[in-house]
Image 1 (cartoon, rainbow over the protein chains, first blue to last red):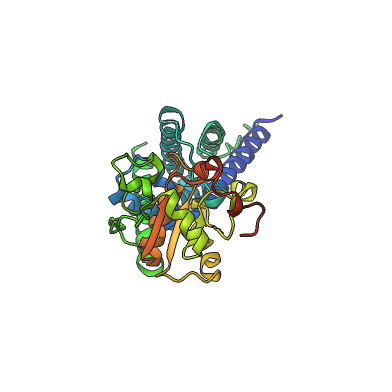
Image 2 (image 1 turned 45 degrees about the vertical axis):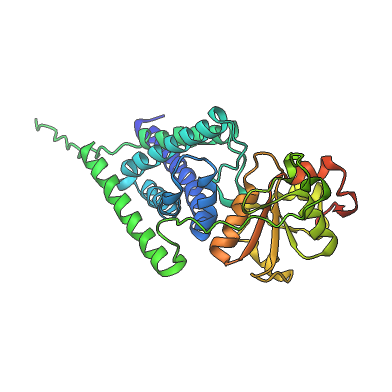
Length: 157
Length: 180
């Protein structure tokens, strides 16, 4: 496989990973934006945020997910989007680990609105998968511009 | 790297602005969550044993905003209260109080039409229960009913389904399936 083909395949995989992660984040954000009060209940179940600030988190966090997901789709903003997505995923994993494993709460993760699974290993597994997909979407994409073709002028006799 | 972080912060700021506009124009949710007024202590009917010096049974000691088994049974018999089951659909299907409306804490706002459709008025007495023990679903649902829908007489049956099943006093009031 030539360098050009290998590069194209890498870019294709990077785009697919970016679209997959962005799709999951946009889907997750949709339900939360539609029912922010419901998302506030989901956050409350974790017992990590003071009650006073539950609404603030429920209002802002889904839109951060949207912003990060949209940024991840476009190559120009992909790395910035990836920074946000990775930060959000680390936060989610820490919250689920604290609630489900450390505190032993039997709660819905609240990740996808009413479709959410129980907070636990499955949730962490999905977050890890998204984490590596996000890394792949950035690391497999090359931002270097192609070097301009060098015209070789054959020397005359 | 610095440029990427700056862009990320810019995206965060733009998203936050979108969130603020969406909330100000669409949801109009309070920015900060104010505590709801606590419900009065339930009027648990006094039984013979309660008038003696004997301590009441653990399940009969109702805290403010909650009801105990005796009052729940009295309301079931008289039909004076509406019951809401805050557990998930599967649990509800396996068994619930006859007439109880399913309102899982994971879909309160989406399923409120079911509650209003069953004829409950905001001034009616509503008793919410979940699995019992340390389950918080009933408290979350009761909180939402009071805070966001203006219900004025919502009580939580804290011991919930665990006591309903184990006490043996609810046999005639229990049913299974999807229908209330």
